[in-house]
Length: 243
Image (cartoon, rainbow, N blue to C red):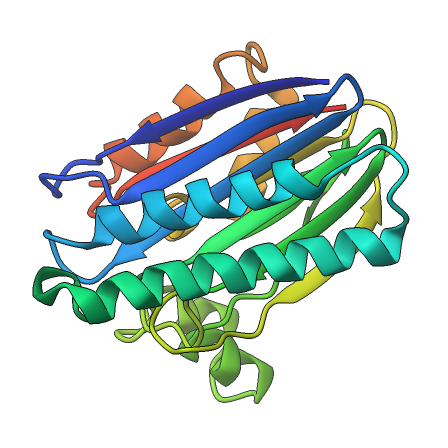
């Protein structure tokens, strides 16, 4: 397995409130986490970095090579709950942190078997030589309206409330996460990213850069550069993994 990472403040924000973690748990297992914080300049970065760190540490502590799929799901759910409790508890204790929260998308890659968990609108994609597939479903107002047929995909791209998310880590005492399972073929790539990328770079553009770009090593930089060339009003984070 090889991986490449990049996070960038973008063109407008003074502070990067995205955070990521990549941990090699053993020679066949890689853990990746991307979080996108919210709650104002004083706390969004705290929420994202705290959630990513707590989630990753919890997985590291409980992971071992003989876990079955059900046990992996339980560990991932427990790590989400612990991250949520930690961020929520900090937001109650400190006035500066009131209202902070973060998205979270994470992948535990064990050989070619992948378990993905998400809360919010940071995304996971699988890219093969011919197509790109979004694995996660956004927990957002726009996605809800799309699912109910109230918006078309074209309308959704410029919808004024597109940044409103319906689930987040740390904003409530409890949180629900979605879990997905997939099997990667050799050569497939897994991309985790914040919405600072997907709000400006569409799926087909991501597919082109990942598959046909000059090199995988520079792919995250090229994707971030596209977002920045379009004004990048938000922070942009990419984690790309090749099995």
